[in-house]
Length: 163
Image (cartoon, rainbow, N blue to C red):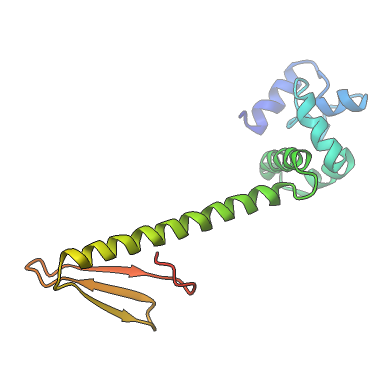
């Protein structure tokens, strides 16, 4: 995406074409318009959704309180959050975060099962396989009496899942 200064320069060189905010709200777009660098005239839908969820006045206040170098990121976040809120009016982006957290938990459980299966197979294949569990360290040391003298460590969390 273009930098703040590129957008501002194109806005100034375009003869003050109204930004999306001023177009939608039917205002005169001034050279000091807080929205112009972030909502170009062809971004009506982008501004419309932010305006619908947060209100133009609130967004303007938020932008004025931020340093210029942080405003573009703030606008991108507001657009993302507004889209999430429209898709899921109750939970918004928290719903998406919760879904991702559930997926991570499910994948961690699957990983723990796979690691336990690997451990069982290793134990069946090598009768000299030994296990040392240190509950204070929350780790499991696996070793086999072979010439490589290699050790394998698995860690597990408080729920008992192997990491």
